[in-house]
Length: 147
Ligand SMILES: [Zn+2]
Image (tube, rainbow, N blue to C red):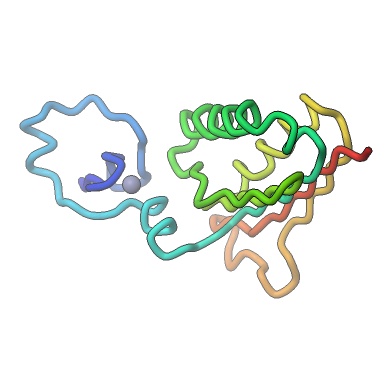
């Protein structure tokens, strides 16, 4: 078994898990490494991009940030790999890059649910097909509020 030195996820030989019930003594014996998600963050590997545009972004920036971080937390409890790499804001536009594809979709859907508007999901941009059924493809999601 292995443990991630950054986020404390544990690898049980098959998959990484965000939470574990191991004793401190047991944890001390685990091999120390970086998990897939932390490696992706370190190497800037992006699987999801969310483009947001709308007046809500400039009108209620604090609320928007809380909403995005809450969505990350919820998704992370289902899949430890759901992490935001970075967020760029420019007035009424925002770009969020995520290290797994499903988080990007969930964030954009949350905006659609809260503010209505238009949602477009583009999966697997040409040239970026998944290599096998286990590897996820990239996704780019656009949400705009309209006027
Ligand atoms: Zn980690």
